[in-house]
Image (cartoon, rainbow, N blue to C red; front, side, top):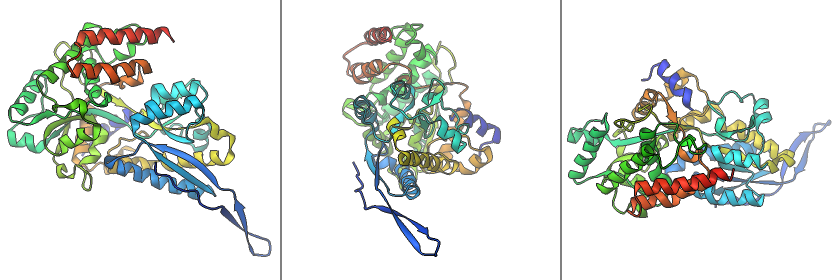
Length: 452
């Protein structure tokens, strides 16, 4: 079990189903003569967009459903129209279009940086600062920076995450394998697994963000944890040798056949299945994935048999070689249009009060493996973490002296689109070189920087 000191370190970073509209509600009040008077309440419909879709997000959706029930109970006549959309589609397609048209959902899944700042600048998001002050929770979050623009808060993080390698402990034990502590050891581990007829690392690159989790870690190892933030200022370039070395390392693993063959045709769901089926021995993913390996979930066959480790250091790498991606960038935002309706504002306050509290944060941790985004007392947290995998995850996060945010929270949307939708797939598909990839990305980066 973690010590209080370790847990305090952990907390330092933490960082369409449509419900048909029912009839009018009512308020029951007692009159002076003791008789009950029923006051009819006009029905109120609000739209709630979430991204908790798919088998592996059922626990998360259950938490949201409980919150929705409480809010509907708090606000007479309220009924939510619930719209479930896959995360990438919501962020990069649907929500962008709705924002441009001026008709976003009332409450919606929102990516912090840079999205919330862009929408806040355009006046599309509700300023939550006075609501948080009224509810007394403004200082209860580990960090609100990704959702803050010009000193005002425009969204709330639902949880924190880190990224690293999940590994099959049973296979490691059977084959006498150890967690690698250097990059040469890691390369040898991959070669050993492949020679045994197994897939070393799960692969699913139809959605570019999946392989870019690991690629982002690699270029941050070789070029430094702050390199990505320097692309927008011109202090660093995608074409810099150290950044290109990160691309080259990823391509080396592709060329060696260390990922699942045919990965360009696989979705994220396939990525998980490759690991839970025992076909792939390693899975690079966010800490949220830990929930899959619980009893009753899709990976329950690996319950108690999964471990977690950080990407090993690279030779001559720049900066902290224990660093990994950690953020509190996923959360909820609210349309500025809700401010025009007092009842909708009442619902917004109820939603925040019922979702962003210690009980729900601990439920997210225990039931779904989502690290708290709010400050939790060390003793309470210690009592909640009983899962061996989560204990190991916390150990890894505590051993990391620094962290870096994901690349798509730092660079412009055009740059994210170029690397996510074009360049990483071309690299995996042998249609470009690491050097060409860096040059093409830098061209788009310079165009994006010049347009600001």
